[in-house]
Each structure stands twice: as C-alpha cells, then as structure tokens.
Image (cartoon, rainbow, N blue to C red; front, side, top):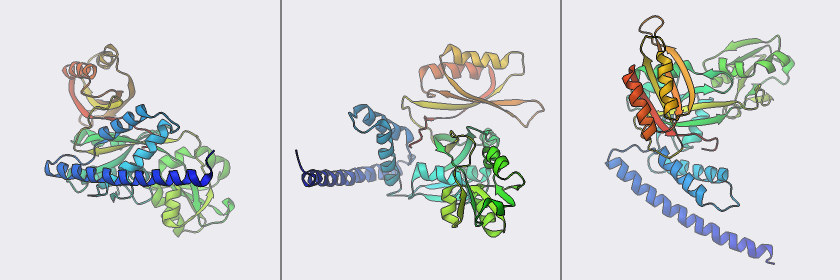
Length: 358
C-alpha cells in the first residue's frame, strides 16, 4: 500500500494539471467573450451553463455526486463570468439583503452590483442599459408571491433569463446582549411573517416595525437602543452587529425564488421552465378553456397567479409557470391555441429550472 507522502505527491501532480486546464479554459472563455461583444450577443448564457452541468453529471462515475458537480461548475462559471468584463447587476438593496445574496450566488463576487430602492428601479436600470441584468424576488415558499414583481412584467418588455433558489435563514441581530433588552424589532414584512411564531413565543410584547428591506432594518437596529432586526448573517457581517438568536424562521424549508431579468431569451436545456401572462376573454369558462390546452399537451403547470389588470374594474391578468421551453413542440402547440382564445398572450421567458447549488 502506498504511504501518505506518495499519495499526496500524486494529488499535487493532479492539482497542477487542474490549474493548467483551468487557465486554458479561461483563455477559451476570453475568446468567446470577445466574439460575443463583437456580435452584440448577451454575455450571460444560463442554458449553456446548465447543459455543461448536465453533460458532466451524465459522464460522472463518482465518487463525486451530481450536487458536487453542480457546485464545482457553478463556482467556475461565477469566476470566469466576471474575469473579462464584470457584469452590472441591479438588485433590491441596500447591501446585505436576500436579493443581494441571490445576486452573489448567481453572478459571484466579481460582478458590479447596483443596489436599487425599489423593484421598479431594478427594471428601469436594465431597460435603460445601466445594468446588464436585474435580480428580483418573485415568491417565497412560506409567504407566497411578490405581487409587485408580477405587476412590473405587464408593462415591461424585459424577459426572464434565469431563476435562483435561495435557502433563506433569518437571524435576530442586535447590539443588545439579551432578548430581555429588546423592546422593538425592525424588518421587512416578509421576514416578519416568516418568523411570526418565533416572535410570538420569544418576544410577545415587542413592537414590530416594518422596513423596506432586511438590510435597512439591520442599520436601524444598530443605531437605536433596545432594538433588534431580523436579517441575514451576510448583513450581520457587513454592518458589524451581533447575533442574538439563530435561524428563527418558522419553517425548515424556507426558500425564496428570484428571477434574473434581461433583454434576451435562454436556449433549450431539456430541463426548462416557461413563464407567460395571459389576458383572457370575459366569458363563462374562459380560464377552464385555457387550462385544457395545458392538459391536452401534457404540460405540467407549476404556478398560477391572477392580478388586476388596472385598466378596468374586475378585469384580471393571469400568470402561468410551467415545465418546458417555448420552443418545445408541445409548448408551441399549447401557446398557439391559447393566443387565439385570449385577449393577448405574452411570453416572459423560458429558462433553466433553478437548483439550490447554482
């Protein structure tokens, strides 16, 4: 049996080969980045990244798992993505919000991140080419949909390029030393809702004050006496504030879904999701007729939401998410039928199904 030194020597040799290959890959990526710039092609291609992960996972014989491959390649993509021209990413700020965390997860540390005060501002930054992409929250597994994001898609011409799934963990942050000293808690309404049972049990008489973001809450809690905030560990590090209680969310499966918005569509990967909005005709059974086309074409719906059209009282627009790509034959058939039977249909985007590791 080989001794430890011999094995380590072999590992060192493999590591040097990996380094050479990574640098060789970087040169190839640089060449593609230059060609994309000359041809005015979108710099971010999530469908290509997903295909690479799927191909490597298929070839993998272990002991690395599929999740390991996803994590390793996700890290490589993020490093290379910002190596030659850092992407400008608009997100719901300030620094330290969960939207900021989602943006960092997808685009890495090398991006140029632009904090925005509102979801409207994120859309505007991308529309006016002051940002390459935007990251917006769309739904939480506990609190449901972010309606303002849905409303923005009605008027905006931006597309959904990718989705990001983020495990959300909440922490009670404060400069106080004990829960007994906390008389008020700042946070975003969604964060308060996600920690409601913990708050009732541990801080029943505490005043709750809603803020525009969890990061804003942390800054306010740091300034005020007898105050705390519900926020992330990232925010605790950024704003240098202590942690009074860890993981205070009520559900162990607290996941927030974010969308990457831009001006391009993603290609097919075989594991895609499509989002559309539809204004249906004012007649009996109109929604039922629309849903039948999904069933007939064996399309799995993952979400349906309705929002007021804001053009006429009791007039609604429906948002659908479903598995499949807009270029799949069965999806094309369904969308053609739905368009003919609707006031209008708008494809918001087809994009790779998000994973927790990328």
